[in-house]
Image 1 (cartoon, rainbow, N blue to C red):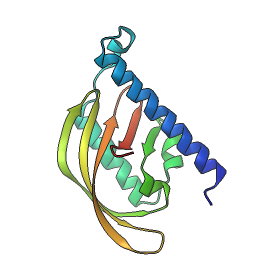
Image 2: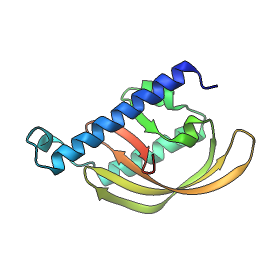
Image 3: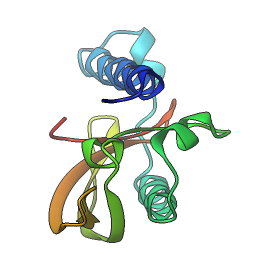
Length: 138
């Protein structure tokens, strides 16, 4: 059973991701209010995901990052379910995707039963107006 605090935390992350996605859509359709949103920086996004995944390796939780200052909002099912990150690398360099940056990451994970697996996953990283990291397949 997932603790209520974790469910609420995941919901907050999902709401933040929807807000960021809607901002991107508004900007793409030419709405004036969204035109103030700047595209994320590829170098900053690469640094953010690297620093964040190092924290995952060290045992930090999604809640820890959300509560940090400045907060980092992460939406990743493996991390949320308690998988350990043993190793990671950037498999495909950063590319602009709307106002987000897309990076393909290679992850070596260990599930809660100790089974190892390797995954190649596209992540969307936003560096402005908030720092967010979300699996593209979520």
